[in-house]
Image (tube, rainbow, N blue to C red; front, side, top):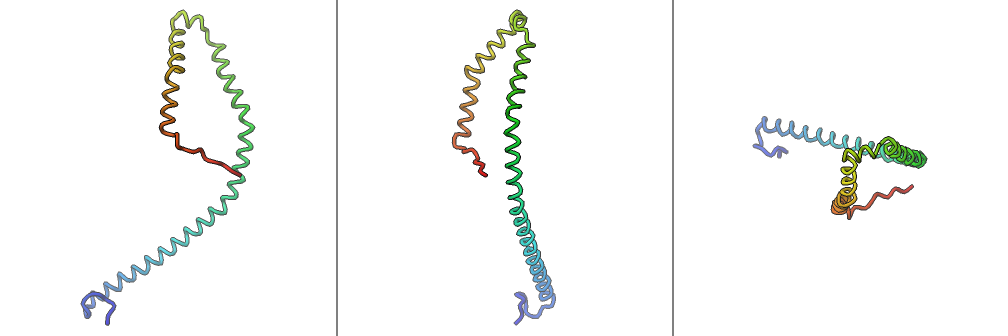
Length: 132
């Protein structure tokens, strides 16, 4: 009995069956090669994780020292804006009233609308926990 599911004595059918079976076998071997490649990549990534944990702790140490500079430059920025601004001239040109209206709007409802929108979208989101 022939392995070919076609007519038993057709040479073309037999050859085509062998051809497609050989393609199936080669595809199967290619798939197993790919699986082995991916396993090797996964093992390589697992080994690199311990190295990245050391980098993460070093980066956290470096970032903690820069926080003081960040706050200092933030304060300098707004202090110099206040020093350079001539509020009497702004008030004369009615831009001071515009600034006052901006601050009233900002603290009156813009911030609250932003907080409400943030709460709607993120009230169930938990922050990531970074542990050493």
